[in-house]
Length: 228
Ligand SMILES: N[C@@H](CCC(=O)N[C@@H](CS)C(=O)NCC(=O)O)C(=O)O
Image 1 (tube, rainbow, N blue to C red):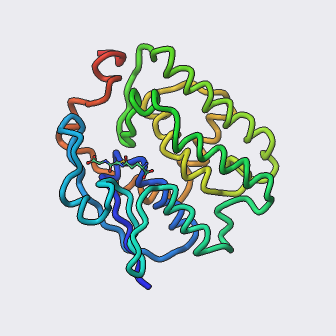
Image 2: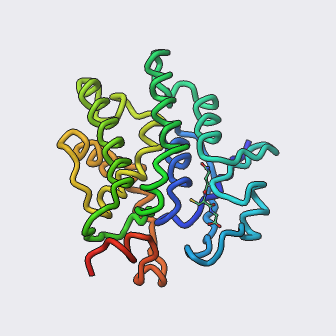
């Protein structure tokens, strides 16, 4: 059965990176089709090319055997069921429940980080100050990473020791920490290093191309908080 994963611009589409990593980590073969999303500020309407492949007008979307699975988390869950041996969720049921909570918090939360710190994998910005609500989001992310890395340090470099869907969901956040020069604790920073050393992440990063409009920046950070 052929699998096609539609993703957005690799440098910017954080939701696309997440299931892409899950499929690669699980060794599930797929063809990847990148759709160039409109530049931020262009408008909120879904572009026709995306609507042709995803009913919600957003990427990522997976097409598999006549089935369309839209939404990053639904695709990650599909991958976990498709390749159980890959253990994309922790095997222990209690840890699995915790990993799902960590992923759900990312999937439904951290709106301020998303607003102020758009993913831009190749970019590096010097930030003067983040607004308090964004700092609160970052503190919460740091606390999650610190706690998990402390508890599972002896099992491997990932949040729950071995690589899971939780890492796919926080990998784009690690790139934001790097892009915006966030100072995190040693444990949280070393977690970012694990993401940046991952072969599949490196493959995605190598394919990231900043667009011409990127030189001018586009996030709230650029307008309000970045050093000139
Ligand atoms: N909750 C969705 C969010 C998907 C989403 O917002 N995707 C963005 C790209 S990262 C998108 O397709 N935006 C449409 C556009 O920019 O035209 C998921 O988890 O997949």
